[in-house]
Length: 155
Ligand SMILES: [Zn+2]
Image (cartoon, rainbow, N blue to C red; front, side, top):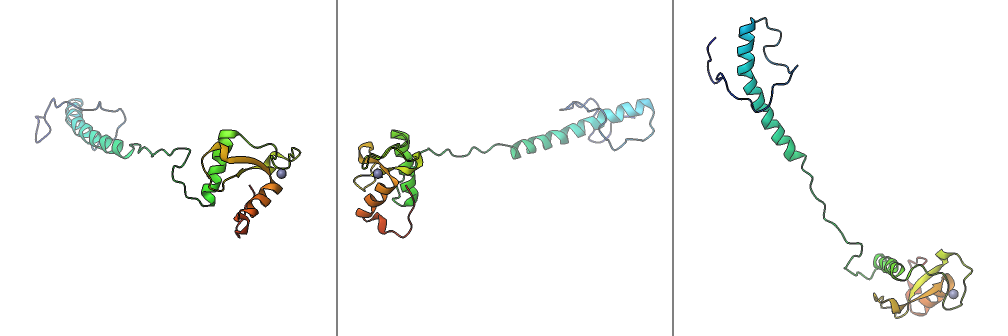
């Protein structure tokens, strides 16, 4: 059988032919010489298709890098979310408060001591913060108007 159509004898395959790969002529009874020629011509076609598919798949699987956010949000909003963030900032800078600077109480659990902002302007200044227990913090905030807010959290 001579080479016909677009299948040229000796056409080089991009990918090596895989054993067990299903071809259109599978199961057909052909002479040994026919089988060799057909598989050879067909090999090139399969490889060409396979190459295309692999390229497309690679593009889909490309990893899109996510933008990284810093630990500290530079935007100071001044709401409770920012208030929370600022307290975390103070804790990172000065550590967790373990006593009250006002009543000198040291017997409470760690969670009952808070960082209170002295100037009430919530500066990112470590000298503008002091350690207070829950009680002193509440009265300290009330004296500055913060206690009047309906939504209150324990700090
Ligand atoms: Zn206190």
